[in-house]
Length: 204
Image (tube, rainbow, N blue to C red; front, side, top):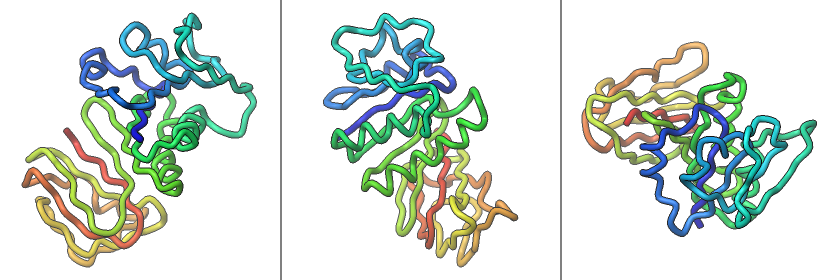
């Protein structure tokens, strides 16, 4: 099952919202994200402590899950866990960036949370897709646009790449030398093999 999650980062534009395919998907809205999807997309579930939403006139058809403000998990974590608990194995996450930088950083871990549960998640914003991947990878890309590959943990080993301006062969990426930043796609599909989880940022 596919799930779509809207978070309370930079509001998703109306143009971008119109391109989101919600057909046959479980739509989850976290807290203040309701302010920018209201009247455009009706969520199946609205959740959070509701400290950042300005309008709480939620649709009667939406299930509302209320959590206390003092909790051990972010609204993003709760949204992803709810999607997983409801059976999602594909998760699209919007509004993960912008706003508070600590939340933007923590939202990268939503990819790992999903992966550990056997689901595939992707973070979307207006101009980027972000993945957490390992092993043999094939991804669509836009020619001459940026592709950055960085380790999620302390390091990761790139065996080979294809379709990138600056190829990597037997390269170890680590957090002291972020070698994989600002590569560029030379083909509409890129390939690489990674030993260890890597965050892949693909410019649209």
